[in-house]
View 1 (cartoon, helix red, strand yellow):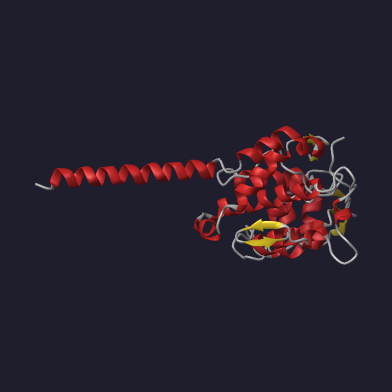
View 2 (cartoon, one colour; view 1 turned 90 degrees about the vertical axis):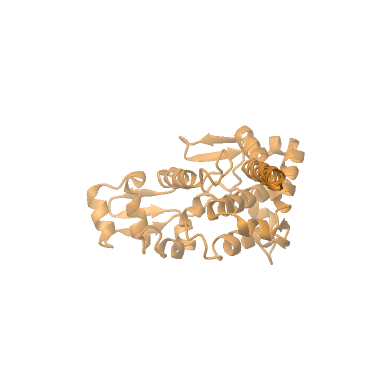
Length: 272
């Protein structure tokens, strides 16, 4: 005589669980919507879509929206983060880095010409501990070099074309938020976008001149990502973006091509 009530109880419980899961999924999916909206409105592609400029003045006028987004990131607990799949974690960390970099710029904008102006003789702006994230107050260095690069979980050197240091020499701040669903295509697009920029990566005869990013973080490109164990092998995967002719590809493969690292432009990536 208990069969019908029990069935009803189980059905009701299932509906509650399903409803909660759907709600949680939607909440997670929409987590970066406000950041996405700010990027859509105030980040503009330049240089044939290879770079972007940021309208910091406009974002400052909408600072409340940015602060609300940052507060939503702070609200995520370590246990919640640990339960996510890796693409969702990585998208979260990249967005956090980029959004808090913008927040850092706004603390002194328009009275700065470079993010380096926010540092001091004794410390860099990237070592400032001002980011409340995953239960600790962290620096931008903590996010990039600790949570992303140092965790050993992601092993994807393309993150260097996604995190943005608010500088002209840096790969473009993407005009949309990173998401778990689109992360792979977004990272790939950012990599091609940067490598195909001949003002920052260019092959001439037997010399490949590339961004200093590859000097600073060269080891990240030699850890077996998609079978690449050397910087040259990574470049060969993007021969089309770098516009390498067959002779240059052969020279690069045989380690007969000189790799030169260009000076980095630390001027603010601001749209006037």
